[in-house]
Length: 78
Image 1 (cartoon, rainbow, N blue to C red):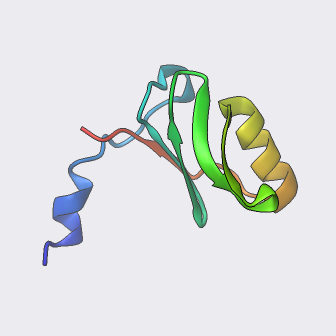
Image 2: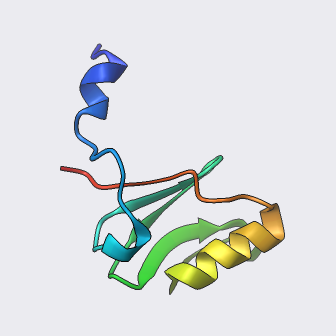
């Protein structure tokens, strides 16, 4: 098995929200979303019990409002 340190090197350390592009990953505690464009992402949205494509800003606000969770990281696979 690979060491966790080996896996981490495949991610850039920090991505600012202004620099988002397709295939970046957003992380919340217990939740992950994948960007499908500069402005939209896809994720499994629990309250609707479906996978949805939503605007990034709306998703961040909705998850904060409904689950009190903030984005803990944005990463890019390199």
